[in-house]
Structure formats: structure tokens, C-alpha cells
Image (tube, rainbow, N blue to C red):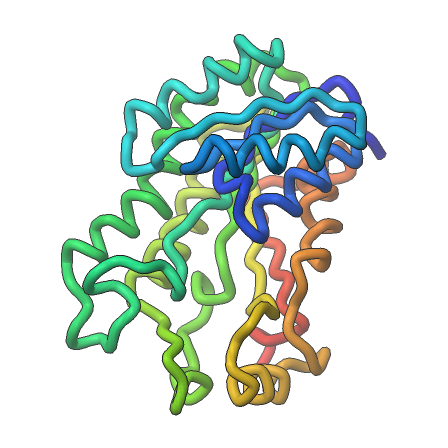
Length: 259
């Protein structure tokens, strides 16, 4: 299994999960375009990938700017020569700082909701349209959306009691929409482009200890995820190992959604 000679675009490529996705692709030999808000952060990821002897390209794009999103695939083709893999990872999450977002439900604003939908979902739609021609020209066209367990299941709000953590309504709504967009594109873009999704469970970072304990207790594998846990799913869906797989949501959650 390798991705030698292929080129990939990763939105949110400088984030926690996005940077690991970029690393996975580079390990397999792919050239990687790292797209994120901050060019310096993109370049920092590219620098870390240099040890894999692959070409990297940083793109500073705000996913709220749909014209900039629309132009990204052409820039990747111009810089790297082709586009074979597109992974949409960027998203407003529970820790995103925006007024009216990570607050109790009654205080969540329509403005925050619409902004999250634009970043989490609308940008994926626009990116898919813009990348279609390049992916069609590839004989290995693969598109992967990073969704969430909250795209397939409702939140257990008892996990958050007594903490400052939040689970905004717009997060789950946008992630669920992303899965339906994936299913739509899997049929519309077939047979030349495969479209799949990865839905991670909660990733261990610096959450309060009480949250970690509660989350772990209701997870069959008895722990939270790490970014490394997603590498296999990315390698599978981006490569020819999954050449007969499309329209699939690969849940990587330690069994959290099986209850």
C-alpha cells in the first residue's frame, strides 16, 4: 500500500487531527497541500513532513471565504501537478471561540450556527464541486470527509455536567449533514471518484478529568481516542485498499456508538 506519485489536499491540515492526516499521507508517499487559516501554521506542518521526502504546499484559506475555497484545487494542481485525494477536516468544534457558539442551548445564536454550517458543511460542498474535474482526471480519485460520532448519535450531555465544555447544536447538525453530503456525492461522482467519511470519537487532549472518566466509562474499549488512532482509517480510505468502497462512514470511536 502506498500513495507514491499522488497529490492530496487537506483542509484543516494544521489542526490536531488534520496534521496527523497530513503525516499519514506523507508517510505513504503522497505530496500534500496543507490548507488552513494561518500560512505559518501550514508551513510548520510542511516542515515536519519534509522528513518523508515528499513535496508539500501551504495554502492559507478561510473556509468562510467560499471563493478562496473554490480556487484551492486549481492552485494545488498548478503547484503539485495533479489532485488525487481531497480530505475535508476543518470544523468549528466545541472549543471554537465565537460569540453564541460554545454556550448553553438557549444562548446559541443563529449567527454562530450559520457560520459553523458554512465552515463545516458548505465549504465541503464547494470544495467537492471545485475538485471534481481534477479528481476525475485521476485514476485514483478519493474524497474523504471527517465527520464525528455526533453526526450519527445525539450527545450525552451528562458527560459535560460540572465542566466548562460545550456541545453546540450546530456541530452535530453540520456533521450529520456532512455524512448525507458524502452519500449524495458517492452516487453523483461515481464511478471515477470515491467519496467516504471518517467519524472519530472523542479525542483525548486536555479535557477535565471528570469528563475523561465519564467518557471512558461508556466506551467499550475503555479509553478516549488519540489522533494516531485515525491513521489506519485515513490510509485505508485514501488508498487503493478501499478501491471498491464508496458511500461508507468508517466510525473510529472505540465502540462508543454501539450502546
